[in-house]
Structure formats: structure tokens, C-alpha cells
Image (cartoon, rainbow, N blue to C red; front, top):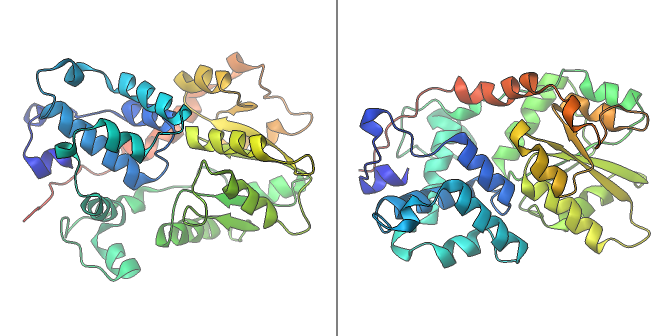
Length: 311
């Protein structure tokens, strides 16, 4: 995105990648970038600075993993996310946030859905189909009926999405499961993760109250939200456990950060129930092949990224 806007060269004509999926995952671990616009802004700014403002300096040679470690340190200190980007990155490398968001929307929605959902005509990618059509459900249609049968009567969603992005996710899940299985939905415009209010709102929205719960997430902000909730909860508030759905190379990271469970798929959440098998001590028993295949499928089968018309 930034490379196209500024006409930068990172070897793309020779097939070189500007960054990898693992680079993105590293910043998801760092926390502070659960919002996709913020993540795009961070990566666009960092890549621009490495290729232009910092070119030929040690800062340009610093790996994305090293930058993600610094971002994590800033998050721990309470100055992560966009605050860290604006403080650390050169001002001349920071793009217009609204432009980043508009291009993100066109990539995600595609021209037709963008017009349908927002009434907006695509400016940069007028013929793009949209990555939204690559989304798929990673659970069987009767999964949530099985959960209720296993003794979990209430279910909720806390999402980093807002507006129509929430709507389409709920539409797809309802069509897949043939029911609205959730009792409450907390979107980022109500309380963005890792704000513990998101979890408090979800608990408050469960009919009849909550005696305890299990939250499943896949980013640093998910874990931090639960940890932040624990830090502010009163003795009368319900205890919430956290299960992390992560890649194999992330297991030790989230183990050290205090995750109660590690799961290889959403379906494995049932094994975290009393009497379940996948407990925090069984790190070496996980079969990662199935999980990796599912998590990578929609990325590897995505259509090629089109060029952006900035005129």
C-alpha cells in the first residue's frame, strides 16, 4: 500500500515480498493492533520508513520481529498501539489514516459489497472482488448446539470489528449454523480490546448472569483483555479463563504470558471444560498440522493483490 503510494522499490519486480504473514502475527502478539486499520497504518508506516527515511541506516536493517518486540514493550508500558507508531516512526513516513482505511475497505469488501454496505463507489480498486468472499467458518454447523448440550448455556462474541463488518460476520455465522447462537455481541465501537470493559459488557449482556466463563482468542489483545479484566474485577465478579488459538511457534509466548489453555482449533474448546483433556500442561500433545492448514487456507488461496490506482 505505502510502496505503491510513494513509488517505492523493495524488489517486487523480482517477486520479493515486502513482509510476511509471520511479521503480521508478531505485531498481533505485541498487542495494540487488533483494529485492522491500525495494523495497516503501522505496517505501511514502518515499511515506508525502512525503504525511504531510514534507508542505509541500522534502523532499516532491524527485523520486523525486533520491531514487534519494541512494540510489545511499549504496550506493557501503557504507550503501545497508535501512540507508539506516532512517537517512534518519522512523521514524513506516516500516511493519511483515512486513506489507509479507505484502501483497506476496498481490499476487504470489494467494489460491489462496498457499494451495497456503505453506498460508496470504489476509488482505488474499482474492479476488485473483495477478500470478504474468502472468509470461511472454522467450526461445523452444529458446533454451538453441541456446546449447549455440553453444559454451556450462554455464548457471546467480542470482536474488533465495527459496523457493517460486524453485520456480515454475524450474517455468515447465522447462515452457516442456521441459528443465532450468540446471546450478546460487543463490537470495538463499544469497547475495543484489550479494554476490560468489553468483557464486562459481554458478561452484563448474558441473561440471568454469569457464574464463570471461558474466553477464546487468538491475539495479544485478546489475552490482555482477560488479564486486564482480572486486574480490575471485584470478588463478586465471575472468574474468566482464557484459551488461546495460536500457531505452533506462538505456544511458548502465550504460555509464558499466562494463558490457561492452548487450543489447535475452535472445536477444542470443549476439551477445556471440567474433565477435558487439553489442559495447560499438555503443550507437546498438540497436532498442529490440521490447525495450520485451516488458518492458512484462505490466505494461500486468496486472489493476487491487484495494483492500486492512485489517480
